[in-house]
Image (cartoon, rainbow, N blue to C red; front, side, top):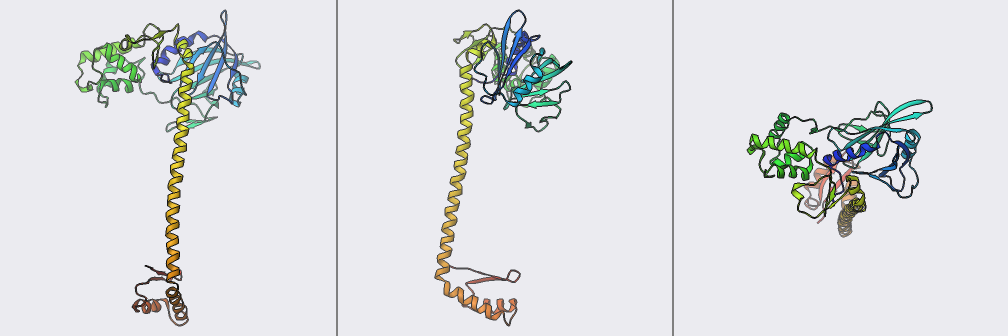
Length: 376
């Protein structure tokens, strides 16, 4: 079962999250024991308590129960100070990216202040707490990207958007597909419009287009049909379901015959499969740790082999010096005596002309007062 939410799935989840707009924040949980998880306990007038659970890097859903609180982090304590008692005014998805912006109105002493809690659900994931002008007040993990810096006191910059299918018109859609450098229509749809592989395949399936068909060979009518069906994927009747390896917000035609379980909401589907998702995430983390240890071990083995080789070379050098000790000692004595009367150039000439030392003596370095000899 996959353990991340696509942009299209997030689009449907945000629709479900609208239920907590206007709710009051009762409590916020972010513990040292589980720093990747943030839980916001909300009170909805006339309905009671509901939990908004975020599990970095890429899982979110509405819940009704929570585990023990644990030891709060500094990040969690700051959110409690500024946001508890405040109201969630708006929740939205940034363009069609895996980014959620939560606008919260809170009373600080006697003043009303607005804050933004931004949840990034890609790469390693992140949660960023900003003031009304998007200055970063606190953050789960400071990060540096090629085109933006996520650090305290910096202004928050949204990740660069590739294409927002929610606002893309048909002619723009067709132009972007035609200019794509991807070889197949499914790859062009998945990457250019941020649909991901599953929903790009679904668009091809309901359009009766071979997903591997080359972009350059698609007819104008097929382009138009693709656009219509991609837009339809954004407005399907919600009917969350889970099969063997995936959770979907609606019934996919390409998976219609597969055995599946249906749920009241997408959040319910994620919640019921939460343990599986957690297991996948922890296993992924464990695999990374194993890979890191294996790489370290390989480096140490390589270093050990290099040390052993160097040891053998130095041992052989020592043995040669011992074997040729008399010859080396004679050369040194001659040079010491000669230096009392002659220059280095004269000594070098006389020694290199002597057939006894021609093979052994390779050079004399006048600057460092050293000699270079070669031993067989």
